[in-house]
Amino acid sequence: MLHAYYLPLPNALISILKMVTLIATIIYTVSLVINNQLSYGTMIAIIAYVPLIFSPLDNFMAFILNIRGAEIGISRVLNIYDKGEKVLQQRNDNIIKLSNNIALLVKDLSFRYDEKSDSILKNLSFNIKSGKKVGFVGLSGEGKSSLLKLLYKENEIKEGHIEFYGTDINDFAYSNYFHYINVFPQESEIFNQDVVFNIALGKKSILACKKDKIIFEIRNMFDKQLNNFLKYQNYHFQLDEIRETFEMMGILHLEKEIIRRDYEYILNELTSIHFHKTYVTKEKLDNVIKKTKLEKFYGRPLGEGGAFISGGEKQRVILARFLLNEHYRFFIIDEPFTSLDIISEKEMINLLKEDLKDKTGIVISHKFNVLHALSDEYFVLKDGMLIETGTHKELYKKDSFYRELLKTYIEENRID
Image (cartoon, rainbow, N blue to C red):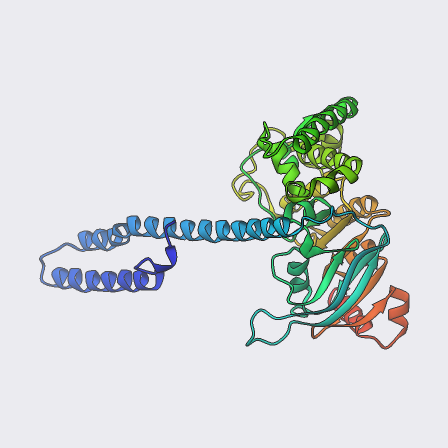
């Protein structure tokens, strides 16, 4: 792989070279004009053409920057994959089964980016029970994003631990873990495809009336594959997507006696995982597109990175992806609706509020109207520590940091 970090001619050096060349050209051509060796118009034309000389170099540097971005992206993906593989190879003693009481347990969690830096999270401990929606409140830089990166398994947990429905998150393979989590991120990639592809992300659209039949066929397929896997040594899967589903659950590294013991549970999970990562019902997809008011983008490419749509429309696409996902146990909403007008924001909040009934998860936002609409209770972070917990009424009655933040928010958004 080309290591862009070590290539010559960085941007600063090229900028200096451009400037020196332009100044030298101006000085030289002005001297020629003064000596009547060059016309004024020709001088202007020469100076105007100087930047064009550097166009190939600019294009080359843009290409190098793209290579650098791709290298970083590939490195992150491979790092996540390697961690997942390591987890699966180490875990061969049991199948993961999620409990139903405590959705998220954080115990004595501390985090710093390196040994020389201060701790961003300090001895953090809390739990979120199943069915509860918790809003995280705090100033910027208080550790909310760092906590999310730990929950996303992007950073390694070195002090303390996090349990997801009774299982340490380090015991999950990355893909299996995110099968149970629905994320509404601050930003997300928009592809140069139409709205259907950008929301369904390549899943096959099927009619709802065919759903049960397809699930039955998938179950039978995995029943045969699972039996063959138990029967034959070094069994070769006919389709890569079947092997991928087995890998998501870590079945390839389990003892066969464990598979036989939990056969029905494993078969049901394989069927569910494969269906939800492959199919989406057309009725659900069309309904989500209609609710988020994205019908006008049927058959229209949205542009690379959403170049052909507005910031607010990008937020609607991200929301539609979130709403389309039905099979999850926990949600994470991170700073939603940053690019929507007030009326559209209210509409989208109501859609999200309706979708999150009886769901479990966390909401992070600096907007108290979003937090109040989507949260049952609040965890308040300050200096990387959890300093307050409770409902809005409980925290507002006290002389609390929550109350101070809320009053500041109301004051800043008041119109005189």
